[in-house]
Length: 124
Image (cartoon, rainbow, N blue to C red; front, side):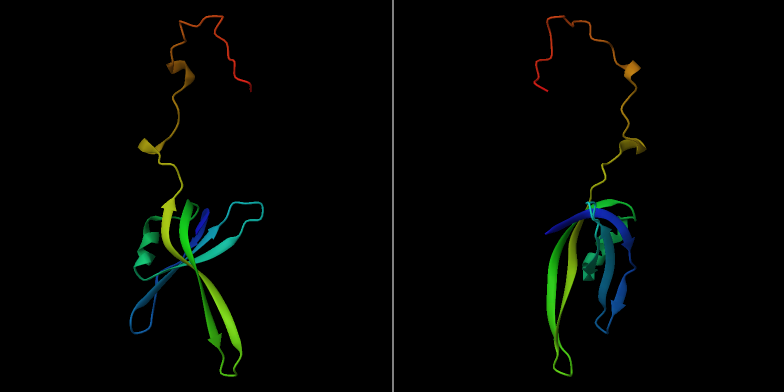
């Protein structure tokens, strides 16, 4: 599954337990009529995937849905869901030379071989 949107927040990498479990949270805001703020967890070696991204950047994130069951000491069963990221892709077009701007119109030569009988026959 995939989620697209703009990065709202990139959390710091946190380490838990004696075995060094690592987790990093990313919040992506979808761009639709009713935007959603989705918290996506990256774990272990996947936490490093977020190092080259910044807040505000449009991205596509590959995700897996995770669910687990927990039984309280009182015997009550609860269910928890999480979204786990495993890939992230920049959707911002690359801008060579720092800009992606077309040259001004006066830098183009006018057409010399244009004939009046050449017309646009497109239906729209």
